Each structure stands twice: as structure tokens, then as C-alpha cells.
Image (cartoon, rainbow, N blue to C red; front, side):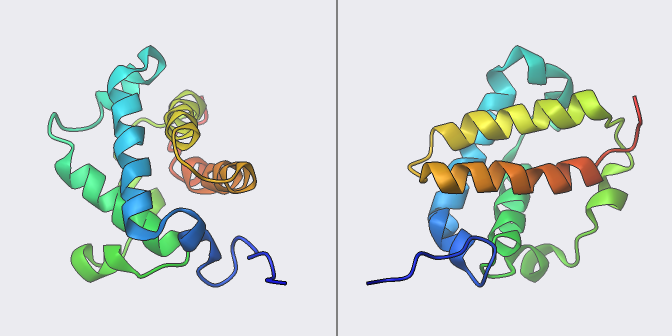
Length: 135
């Protein structure tokens, strides 16, 4: 009998997300949601018209964050989520819109329900750390 991987340990989360290609699909669906969901229009406006680099950066960040290869730092150097996002007016409304886009994207993935719940709960942490406003 094979032991069930424990998300958050080793590369179990990276594997559950489908490794690089699975994470890339998640990120593509995330930015597609940001482009189409009315409640995300205000956070979409914080991004450039061309999302190519944003898609690459988020994919690479999530690969390492989920226990896989540290692809973000290999290409872009170190990451400091709070200081990078400080330039943007991010409060609870923006955090929640970002999480709504991620929830929409996760729902489209072939992930197990357990991993989807784990992923969304864990994503709250960097989303909250990105806030620069209280209201």
C-alpha cells in the first residue's frame, strides 16, 4: 500500500499540481479569470496589458512555493512578495479578488478536492502578505 503524500512536505504539492505544466495551466486559467471576472477588473488594471511576464513569474514562483524547483530565483533573482506589491494599493478587496481568480482557476484543474482545498487555504498567506492597505 502506497502512503498518501502529505501536501506541504517535500515536493508533494508540486506533484499534486501537475508539476510545471500543471502549474502553468493553473496560472493561465488564473489570468484568464482576471481578464473576465467583473470583480477582478480593478486588480487586472494593476497589470500591464501584456501578461506574458506576469504569467511566467507567477508560474515560476508557484513551482518553488509548492516544493518544486526554484525557477523564479533562477530567472528573476530573489523574491520579496510584500515589498514588490507595496507599490500597488492592495487591501482586503484586492486580496479577495485575487483569491477569487485563483479559486476559479483551481476549479478548472484536474486536482483532487483535497489538494484544491489545501492550495486555496495556503494561497491566502501570500495574498494577505501582499496587502499594503488596511481598507
